[in-house]
Image 1 (cartoon, rainbow, N blue to C red):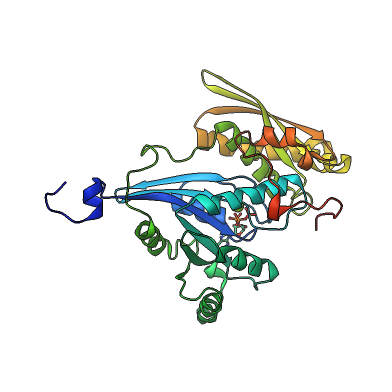
Image 2: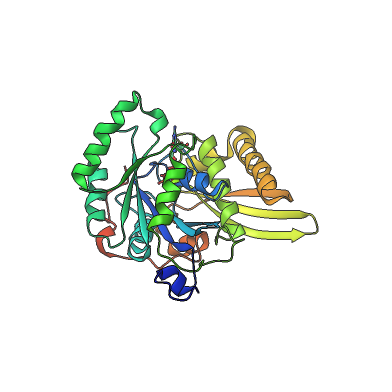
Length: 325
Ligand SMILES: Nc1nc2c(ncn2[C@@H]2O[C@H](COP(=O)(O)OP(=O)(O)OP(=O)(O)O)[C@@H](O)[C@H]2O)c(=O)[nH]1
Ligand SMILES: [Mg+2]
């Protein structure tokens, strides 16, 4: 420490900034895509269907100027199942514990009541909230962004709003500068070589689910869940047994496909990407199980995410009868 310095960082002995940042937004706002772009690595799965992310996904970015621990979160929606209630509990608890919130709003879509709900929710949070207009590559003409920034500021006066496009990396440097600037000074929270805290088992299950979402188009978005039953690593082969849960027999038929074609294609997609990401040869076996209420079955939900908090009640209460839209 420099003698006589009044700089807080020097007093603490840490020049860098470090802290936690929550990515919050409606389903499909582009949170997971942004996380992967910021990390320059695949940490979270992405799909064109809403409610893809179901758990808190952690991405840890370490640079010379400090460390950001990102929490990619489920999109904020009205929960109709225990699983969804649990997803929203994850959002709520993140909002209470992080140092900074990134509020992602899809600039390519009109803002509806769900967006307003989110603005209201963010009114009372303690950490600073940075507004992000996402998917600006889809906005034409570019001048259309100005009224959106104004509309955002009308709802949250004085807020900083940054327009970004994750696939085009547009605005990401400015965003990173802003994030590091807003985080407290302090030591890194994790060793520099750690990029995520999710287990290999969880990541494999997520990747299988991503491939399933991609292949099954609009048929099954909410009704499938994946659990990795067995992982067995020998010298140069990782053997994986995974179970795909569906709610009805007809859905099992869709997942298996004609003559087993769908499950074979999903397995192949997942195997190829896992081999690339994990750098090991993979033997992947997929099974399909029908469980009519798996989204309300605490045992299954625990298998899917053993580290998650217990299901909460409160503002995210699950209606007993109403079917999900
Ligand atoms: N053109 C364009 N598409 C994007 C952008 N960001 C995300 N997308 C697409 O939007 C869809 C949703 O992206 P996700 O990253 O899965 O969205 P999310 O907010 O994590 O969604 P949930 O996990 O369901 O809450 C995917 O099809 C992405 O490819 C963007 O900046 N530009
Ligand atoms: Mg997501």
